[in-house]
Image 1 (cartoon, rainbow, N blue to C red):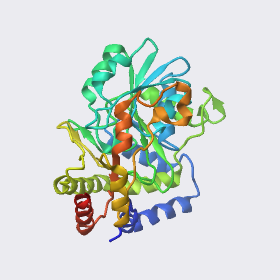
Image 2 (spheres, rainbow, N blue to C red):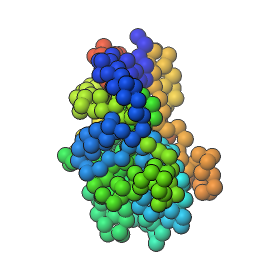
Image 3 (cartoon, rainbow, N blue to C red):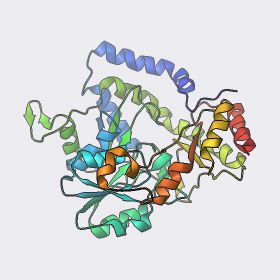
Length: 365
């Protein structure tokens, strides 16, 4: 049996009529930027995130970067980010001219360890950027308490966690702002690059929108040195067509994850840990194995697609060698990078496919 790591076909087949209708609607209207589709999606997604405002932007990286920029974070400032995440989190900080400060994750959840944050705070620290990695919510209560104690902003990186909840409250609604990615592979994915910044702060929302529109609050009037990052009408229409189905599709991911968690019994494999406060949406189902590369080859040889998230930790990436870090500086992030393997997880997986993955993982010796 051949099982891809991810497939959009089951979802796209199911939503074919709605997606084609969205395309026709935009195409026939001949209005492609800052129109009715964007406005409608922003309103719906803000409500989904239990927030007041949503500003559509070009991608998830821009969503984070514009939020930081709108908060006034820049040269000479520091932003705390987890040492284990996708590089876009760090790049958002770099792009506004601030300094990245890495904090190790909890080895069980892969997310930033709140107990290590305060030790990283200096007089230059302006914000904490927790990442709800793989769709698993961070432990937000202690993070928010630390931010309040030290008068810091919180910008949530929700790129992989659309609809995840922490103690029953949807992620993205805790901090001053949150950034979402709608890259096609995400739980809520566009048919191209797209993203959004979410906030309940009206002034901040207005500034993010202006910054993403060349720094303009109205046509040809520029109050900031801004960027060009706007959610186009076509992608907004596609996202609006998918959004009403997101909760149901997230539940299907939870069903698949439950089968994996109950069915995988190989002692060589460490399964994901789900704290009591978390209701993940399983963008990624990431296991750990000390012989990760051997396991990956075994699964691939048996027709199962896999991925590694992420094989090189950020502090060892060549683009951040100027920070002066070396191997061993962030051992938990390095351990995760060396042992993590992602199994197939997508809407529309059949029970037969799920059971085959489970059997093959259990057959690895």
